[in-house]
Image (cartoon, rainbow, N blue to C red; front, side):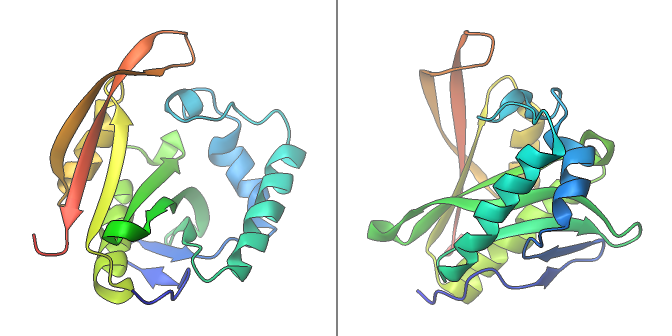
Length: 182
């Protein structure tokens, strides 16, 4: 495994790059404050730009660790930040990582999440040298599972009754995997 860290990546429609402090304004405006966007993630909508700014300051400091893989996703056409994608967990014992992502709802259904996920998976498997990439979603968010499938990931397992959502309901989680040898 080569710890290359967060490198600039490009796709047809997107630029994936390290966060910069001024990105917090677009992030707050486009997704961080939106209850519909944050419905399926672990954090609550940000109440102010200052909350987003403080988070971005913390995340930017993490780039000092070469094992940090966190991108802001920029739509080329508008030069607008539309979301983030990052490695949320590394599993050194089997050279694998779990990816998480979040996008503003104005960009849902355009294929951008699939485009970014596909690029990050390729980078992690081929450039970094991981053997496996994993992602998961709540069963109440099947659109995220479709993103995973379209990016070449295969459904691998269902964990029953393992997550309490923001409404206090117990939910199942689906896992998807992409193997280097796949």
